[in-house]
Length: 147
Image (cartoon, rainbow, N blue to C red; front, side):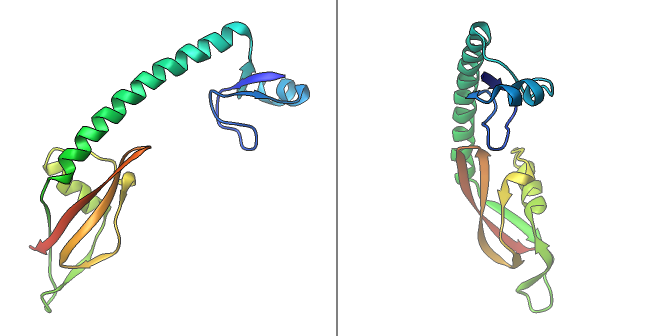
């Protein structure tokens, strides 16, 4: 039995993929629970049209993400932090929330879940990896300075 999956199903396939499964599994589990539909001629045509439209949208998203990546590579980001008595270590640490706050002041709205930072507990220069798209990441240099 050929089905079009409506969501990712472990050990079966991914969303919008045509898979072949045993008829009992399809009729008794996948179709009644809304996880798949029969792969008829019309549903396959609809799926192909949907995938074409998604591909165009995906290309637009990638183009926009590349433009933002080029802009982010050229910015000079400075994060201010309170410094302890030894003039090198900072109180607490710098995390992705601090990084995102400083980026937003420059006009970039990025979700903090897509930012990778190491442990930052001292003044100095660092780099953050920001994932702008599933296929595109950019490394942004920044500096932690005394407040």
